[in-house]
Length: 408
Ligand SMILES: NC(=O)c1ccc[n+]([C@@H]2O[C@H](COP(=O)([O-])OP(=O)(O)OC[C@H]3O[C@@H](n4cnc5c(N)ncnc54)[C@H](O)[C@@H]3O)[C@@H](O)[C@H]2O)c1
Ligand SMILES: [Zn+2]
Ligand SMILES: [Zn+2]
Image (tube, rainbow, N blue to C red; front, side, top):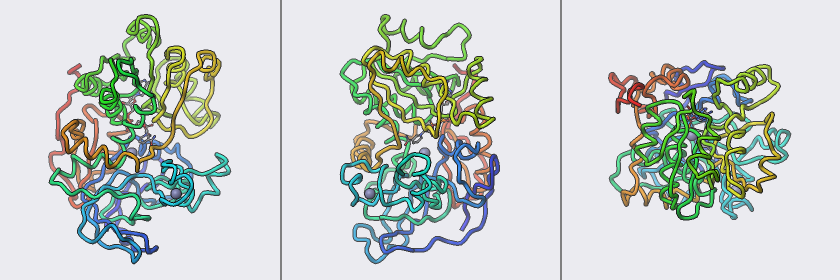
């Protein structure tokens, strides 16, 4: 089969590789019909997630048709149409039983590696390095899905692939990002990052009763989508804007009740502090660039809640923890507990409360993946979400929705 492989930092190639096989009686093999590139894949592309090996198959957002099931799989059969959650969970351990699926104790065969870094290991993830289990990802024509009775959700309606594909990660991730804020009706919510996760967080915050959502980014096409979701937008690249002050002004001097960091470890900043972070990260003196967290710590109102769906990998520098402590804020974070959200969010799509396709800007064939990883990392104009059809080599006109950069 064809698969998108990580070959090194900033090096992606499409290779013919061996088809996956059933290894465990609880496995299923999925013939993938659609897959997507995620903001999290950029952390791999940029080389910030350790323990990647040349040839690793990328991709954790995918769906398809069940091709084959292991002898112990009861809920799925050949021909079923399924979306696969990106976290792999056994369904039987203490954490799975407590609905903390992304903390599953059984799915990561390389848990000992994560334990040396974090004390304990989280669940395994598809296509996301060897600390997270070394499972082959879904930017390919087929994938092996372990614990097939636990994760995949069957799609038994006629919604298009693109309507349900984002149940695999970014819709549940944005939703949990909003839910972790404990939004009370009418609350002011600030969202950093208007990428796919931030956009779903904005839409979800409104579903959960937010009064106003303020969305921060610098790319006009992303800010435009945020406005289409109902947010008031702030362009942080505008020289006249100081984010903490802007949020204070927009909230009557109080600060947002809830803050959501949908940016994570690769936050951009052209300020002196941003340059400091970039240099320290490049010298491996700091693993992450916590620019957004610093702003959120200062901006949030006293007693507010900070939710962090953006991914962090290690040690953060110059974070004013005293501000968080002094204001008595609450914090929640982590990989999404995917399995809690698949059924209710599928229903929200069926009930037309949301159309997740609104953010898709490009549709590509598998051979175009290396070129589009580069464009996505460089945030080339109009790139808001890329969907891959692994059965087409090339799609001649990949643009689905024209979103021009100067259309702020
Ligand atoms: N917790 C989870 O389970 C989970 C799942 C999926 C993705 N994620 C993470 O969520 C984050 C966002 O993912 P995405 O797919 O939306 O990525 P993305 O890269 O498309 O979007 C990130 C956005 O943040 C903006 N940004 C950068 N610096 C900023 C700053 N200083 N202030 C405001 N905005 C800034 C960028 O312009 C960009 O639009 C990533 O860290 C990703 O790894 C987490
Ligand atoms: Zn993802
Ligand atoms: Zn488990």
